[in-house]
Length: 211
Figure 1 (tube, rainbow, N blue to C red):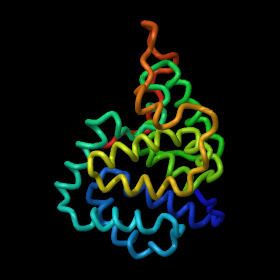
Figure 2 (figure 1 turned 180 degrees about the vertical axis):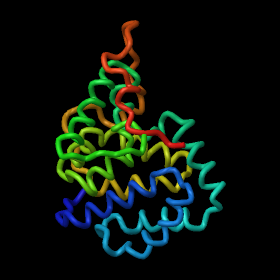
Figure 3 (figure 1 turned 90 degrees about the vertical axis):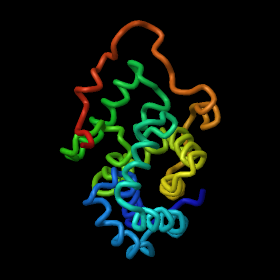
Figure 4 (figure 1 turned 120 degrees about the horizontal axis):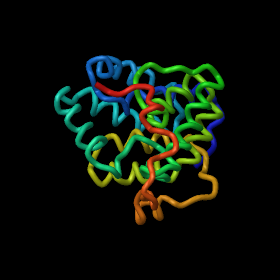
């Protein structure tokens, strides 16, 4: 991956990916033509992939796009949009990881009322677009292996959303020490080894939910 140094272009890419990875309701679909009109303002490495995904979304029947979204992101664990799930599964560690996301948002006054968990990928991307870019990229780097699992899963499911993740990965820094995408894909998300609830209830960290 070649480092992209234009922070403004990176912010625009994160905002674009946040939109394209959101549930394709009427509001999201209405903004897709603007994405296509602004493709040249994105980092060059990501333009082709983002453009292809946006064209598909623009041309798709709304019901088909919504059904495709639910089938891939809501019903297939390998295509999970919650970043901490890949490294932590539904274990106590995930609760603590979610706290770190929420604290990062609070540190810069970033507040969302969309009703999602703080590790929901479109939320993290919006944080990078309008909040703390460096912190968001660090979060994405920590979870890069999970993003690569997501990308591979979407490619396997023949989903155009894979192109959004591919475009995003052009600006995500290399992952620090940790399991590779191949290791995560082989092992799957961790399973809690003791019969205890997470230390931090996941529900208490919700900042919204898709209707």
